[in-house]
Image (cartoon, rainbow, N blue to C red; front, side, top):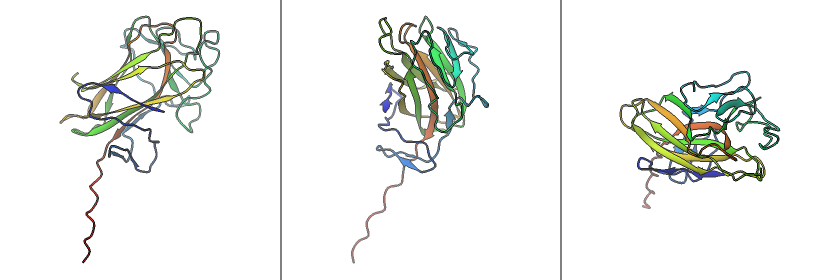
Length: 235
């Protein structure tokens, strides 16, 4: 299942279906051709963790357990019986075919705040990219309190702080079983750029049902296919 981001002014298009990552060219309904993946943030594995320096976050700290408390995040391979069974049992991350693969668990802070930030390199100027990611509400239904599902704000900026694009996931609802959902949106880089800053904020104060997992953040370049050749004229 793929959801399209709700985006503001600088958003130039929407991806309406999920395309699996592969070496084969994948063409979307709007004409983009994805030949490869520029960046893939999958948080690594137990033996080779892909971690990020998030010490500058105001409301979040790192937890080294599989059941992070309020205002904490953790790199997790699996979890079970968290908080007396209020969270789903999750046996593996989203990334296919990895061993003890990691995902990011976030237990919402008491106040709405940023939970992820990273400066990413390798972008071309004046180029259209797709940002895609997989998310899941890890809370069970009917946990005995009024649910407050997370709503994630995603902002892309230049290294100097100018906003490139803004995306919103909408509510990440709880389910009767753990289920990943893919979110995707398109943006264009300006001239003279190679780095993009990715920021993610949970816009809802911490509370019941506001805990989630994140995995497989990808950036893919959109190549415009050449027009088909004109048909040969009959002699």
